[in-house]
Amino acid sequence: MCFKANNYQQISLNDRLNNLTDRERRLLQKSWAEPFATRIFPLIDETKFEVLYCGNNDNNNNGRPNTPVNVVVGSLLLKELMNLTDEELVESITFDPRFQYALHLTSCDEIPYSDRTPSRFRERLYSHELQTGEDLLKEEIKHLGAEFARLLKIGSKVRRMDSLMVSSSCKNMSRLELMYTCTSNLVKAAIKLGEAGMLPARLLPYAEDNNKNSVCYRMEKDEVMTRLEEVTADALLVYELCGEGFEDIKEYQLLSRMLNDQTKDGQLKPNKEISPQSLQNPSDEDATFRRKAGEENQGYVANVVETCGESGNIITDYDFDVNRHSDAEFGAEVIKDLGPQEEPGVLIADGAFASEENFKAAEENNIELVTTNLTGEKPPEIILDFKIEDQEIKSCPAGQAPIDSKYNPDKDEYRAHFDKPTCEGCPHREECPVIMQKRSALVKLSQTTIDRAEYAEKLSGEEYKEHARTRNGVEGIPSVLRRRYGVDDMPVRGLLRSKLWFGFKIGAINIKRVIAAALYAARSGLLDEFHALYLVLVDFSRLPSPAARVA
Image (cartoon, rainbow, N blue to C red; front, side, top):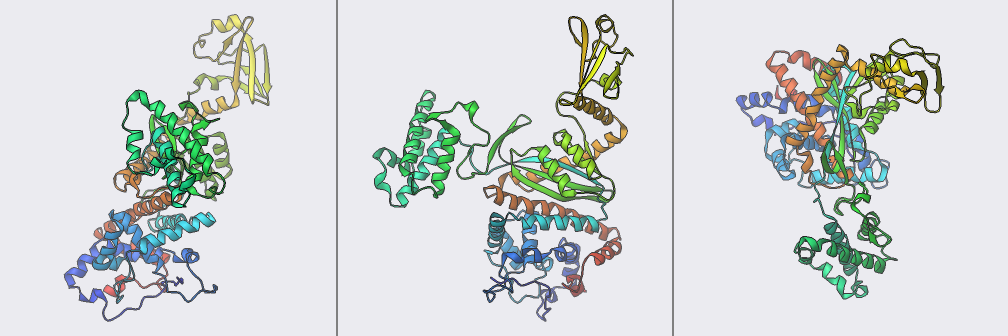
């Protein structure tokens, strides 16, 4: 298929808008389709996706032109916004004037959109990232987020972020189910390849559809371990029999991984020795296990960065990874992506995003990283009352000078001995981190502990309390993604495919906000100001506005 930019649309005499009554036109212009067509659709940069198709420099450049990429991307964003299936999306584009108007398709003699258009485009995006590691959709969603922020006059000084666990759609399997399924899959693959003769009779039932129920479910509780040991022995046997010649078979690779996760020297590992990164289900090999905030999750983790302003909030960055990826790692990646800032910026998150490395990296990039709470135990406030100069503890909070004081550069730690009787009678004895020894009282203060105490004091200030109130707003995004956009029920499996669907959902959230702002501006008589800014951002020489055609 040959790439062709959708940079001009011929207006025909048979334009579908010509058949609308005046009342229907007014209703169309008051609907969501108007702001989408005039403010969102022209911002989609289809040139990013040219690599997915044949180009003019390719030998095979005479193929059928692609469905316009901005139409496909726009339609998939509308799909998530309207919570439609692929079939419902195709029907809407074919028969609903609002969708045709929003996607600039009203002058087409035949709508260039088939029932395979969405799935083929997603497959192209998936294959491209699998081969190159380049996430084209994420680049475009970030590009649109930046344009939306400019459109709504949202500055880039204040950002807030939060993470959420995303469940895989695969079944949560027991150890017995997992081992049986992996064994069954390889047995079926061997039979399909014509290698049934090498399998002993005891393994052939694994290819029968109803055998799983008999082995995994129809038993008493005290039989579970016996069944598990039997299936483990069968798994090891089929793995040994297949061996050479099956290394490139997916079922063999998954069985090998499962056995490495679940066994050691041919024996089952204790539950506590099984890694959270072990295979959870062969139908989703990327899903991992994590326990967070007392809840178990089998799947992935996402991070969302929102740029805040008085005129609104827009998601300008996001990420998606296996759920073993920590918040601190997400924080480091966000700071690196933001890079050096010309003007001081603020990045607000919760305590899980904090680390000494992240604070240092943020400071180097002219960013103030604000974590609204501390993870772990809060240091005693009295630590800040120790007087430290020239890498020595000069006095304690009560004003007592130490007997001696030393600094350990390897541990970045201060050690000082004080008079024991004086410390025992000190009014700060209960809160002071002093350690009573036989002859003296010892105080050990690491620089990390001091820094944490200083930061805890900052958090109690009014400025940081305001930052905490600002961060609270981003906590609603995980709830919206779950309730409105069904992020835990995506009909795909695997890290890259799940990330692809997640990206469209992030884009849909932004689009809903822009549409709401535009409709509010229209009702409030502010449309001229909103549209004037839009004219600055969009080059109408590339794509005519449907609004002009309606007029």
